Amino acid sequence: MIDRSNPRIPAADVDSQFLDRWSPRAFESTPLTDVQLAALFEAARWSPSCYNDQPWLFVYAVTDEDRARFAEALVPANQLWASLAPLLLFVLCRRRFAHNDQENRHAPFDAGAAWMSLALQARKLGLHAHAMAGFSRQKAHEILGVPAEDYDIMAAVAVGRRGAAELLPPEVAAREQLSERKPLQEVAREGKF
Image 1: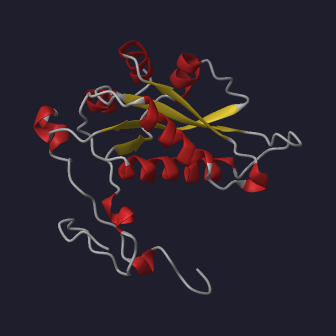
Image 2: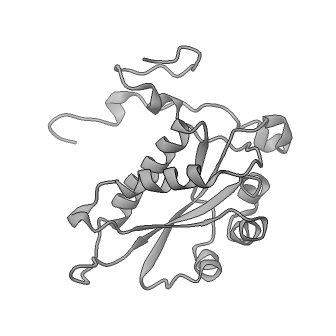
């Protein structure tokens, strides 16, 4: 059932979870519970992957000290808002298959599936997840102590309850709204390119 208070209008009948998921920047600082954290990562754990390799790894921060440390890897524009979220994490993917040590070119795709599972579970819990490309991969590798030859860092993510946009800097608050999508015919084509 589609929530008609949500201004997003689908081109086909889909579950409302897909329309309800979005990436706000305003977060309450209320900590997440251990049960919520476990549910987020459990949802991601059940994501599909090539050869069932499950190449993703979520490295996360919940304490003020760790969140401040993680935020140092974010670009300044993301530091303005993401450091207020009660959960900051980085989505990593292992570069090589565990079973044969060969390059896993599907690992980013699989990590993306795991991230989406986490994002949809966040909404089921009344939370929001906002993924970010705006971070220094080199700085994140240093902060996390992750060997760059073994893992790529795909995204940073802020998770929490949606907060009041008025608490954001004006230039950030102006962007605090649901986004639209391209028309369906621009993202799916039958037969050939």
